[in-house]
Length: 249
Image (cartoon, rainbow, N blue to C red; front, side, top):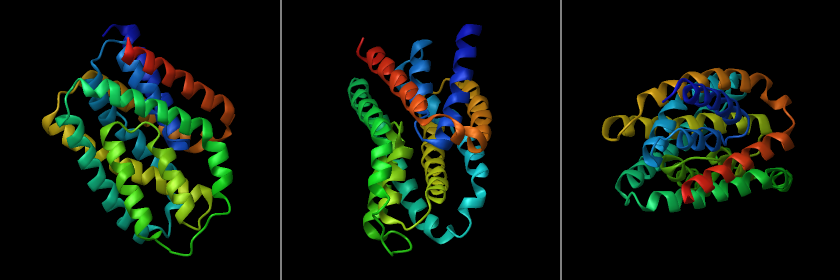
């Protein structure tokens, strides 16, 4: 990796950390950047997952006030996230390597659509509430499946989680976003632990993404909500399109 490549990966890590704290699509920035500098797809996915964990930590810390009073709920839902992440990580390591570009291309395309539809989805969710304090069994199952997705690839898992939590919980959006950050962190940390033990890792990429995402997560939790949402969504979708082209080329 050249110094210019390293700088690009570090900058992508900053952007991903900030985006994950606010929206939840940071892998659409870092993953294609790693591909662009020559890291093989599965190694890029594994290294990206590990590297984004510090950004998840700073993002959670930035929303710690909104996490108050959600301990019991998040213990229940966190168990689903951990179980789902282990399942997704094992699928990544055991499915044929040739299947990864095809599957991830579809996942990136779906993630981009979710990013574009987020404003309409949020508006639709406004009036849909349930009195169950923990969201009930359907939310637990949904979080489990989101964990499988996150353990396998993970781009836009935060948007999926916001959608699920918004449907099943009677909470303010900022508290939902705080819960999303914690559940996403559990997914990434679980998958990272698995990958460190059994997968090939590009540790230079991990360090660059980790430091960048930690910085980005810290500032994203504080000032990221001031960014124009339309500009942010457009940028994410453009990067996702580049990733699709790269994977199919």
